[in-house]
Length: 321
Ligand SMILES: O=C(O)CCC(=O)C(=O)O
Ligand SMILES: [Fe+2]
Image 1: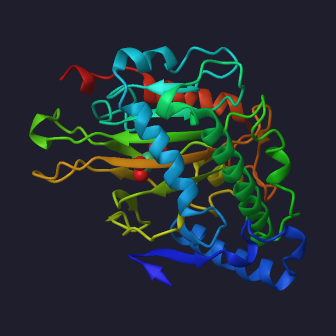
Image 2: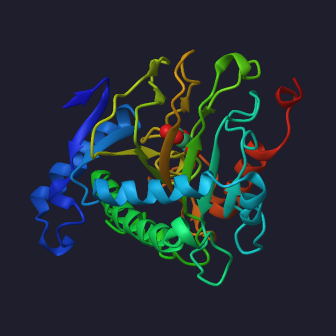
């Protein structure tokens, strides 16, 4: 089944509601073949019946929304860059990140959960009392689903099933920089925006794979032919995409597609929320090409990630316009 060229795959046989040991080889083969098809043609797929429920998504979105409604002064207590063991953890204010460095800062703010340590400062109290618990729980659910997907990706390429999973051993622990990011796009009047400014500039993701949960449609995905597709909302589905390190790892077999979020049309005063789970290989993993070719030189995952962050958090001429 296809939704404006983004395939929709029933993941039920391999979903978290079933124990992996119970999944038959035929089921694994069937699902992995569909992932292969999607990731070699588009780079994105909608997965249905993953075991992650709408209630889980709604709970994380609503506690995140409470956080975003705090004043900037209150939110700045949690700013990104406060922790030496993970520079990506924390709040990112409006227009700070530029996912397309040639555009002004994105009209979005976000909270990155990259550290799961209970001993650091977390939003707490009142409507935020469950913030840490919900982020932590959802991070772990996304991790479990991601590991299943990574195993299926290896199978789909006829590789040893642990090929990708074994470079994500530290997922959710120090030494792995995977991040659960809550995104908030406030109501925006396009006539007040800077020239060329978007809610989220054109980019491809940096790590291995990304899971995206949206409450309303909005993301646009660039096809291999070069035009942007506007996938509708597929209720209950998780939108999964290949990111840049996975494209390198598979010698360009899997596509890391460029995507973006446009400004709302004039007169549309709605806000947008989404949750992105960015899966990264362990910091010390060295990513070569899994087919044994030398199409790309091996890179250490943490170094690659730092280079990409430097591009999207630096200043550009576009910001001074
Ligand atoms: O909010 C969205 O739908 C897209 C966000 C995104 O692509 C990103 O943060 O990398
Ligand atoms: Fe993205």
